[in-house]
Image 1: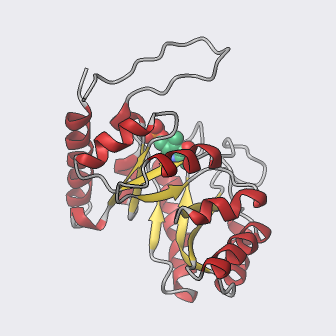
Image 2 (image 1 turned 90 degrees about the horizontal axis):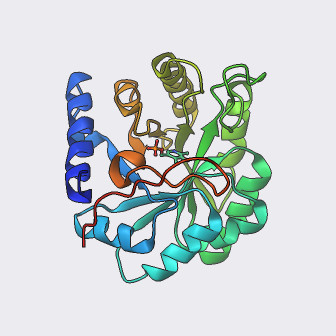
Image 3 (image 1 turned 45 degrees about the vertical axis):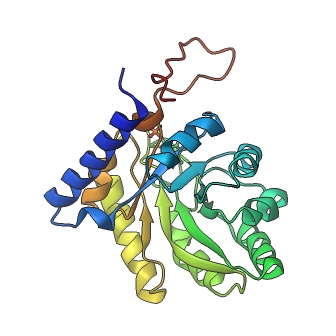
Length: 244
Ligand SMILES: *Cc1c(COP(=O)(O)O)cnc(C)c1O
C-alpha cells in the first residue's frame, strides 16, 4: 500500500496531467485534501509534505482539528452541509465555505464575517442532479435559482462570493455534469467577476473536472486511503501505511 507521500505525488501528477491534457497550467488547479474521518496527525503529516489546503464536512470535526493544528499554517475549507448555528464557529477558524446553498446560511456567515472583521470566502454549491433528484441529488441550490442566489450573496457585507462548487451526480457520467457546471460558473462570473473558483472533482473524477475548468479539486480517498464506514455498516477499514 502506498504511503501518504507517494499518494500525494500521484495525485499531483494526475492533476498536472489532466491540466496539460486540457491545455491548462497545472498550477491553475489547487489540491484540497479532504481529511474528514482522518486524525489531526494525518493532516500534520501531509502538511509537512507541503499540502496547505484541507477540507472537512462536519463542523465539529473541523473545529476540533483546527484547534489541534493551530500551530500549522493551514487553510481550512468546509465542504459539507452547514447549519446556521455552526456558521460562526466555522468562520472563526478561517474556513472557506464551499457549501452555501441558501441565503439564510450566507446571511449567518456574513454576520460572522462582519463581527470578526474578516469576510468569509464562500462558494455556492450547485445541485447537478436536477430538481427531481432523478440523477441522485448531492445537495446544493438548483441551477435555476443560482443567479438570484449569487446576486443576493454578493450583496452581503461579511462574505466574498468566490465561485461555485458541485459534486457529480450519482449514476451519471461526470463529464456532462461538470460541463453544465462550467456553463453556470461562466454565467455567474459574468455578473460577479471575483467568483473565479470552480470547486469540482474528487478522487474518482478529478480528470473530468479539470477538463471542465475546475480550479479546486477535493481529494480524500486517493490521498488518505479508504475511509472507515459508519459503524453498523459492513465494510473494512483499510488505513494507508504509516507515514510517521
Ligand atoms: C468526501 C468528499 C470529497 C472527497 O471524496 P473522495 O472520493 O474521497 O476523494 C469531496 N467532496 C466532498 C463534498 C466530500 O464530501
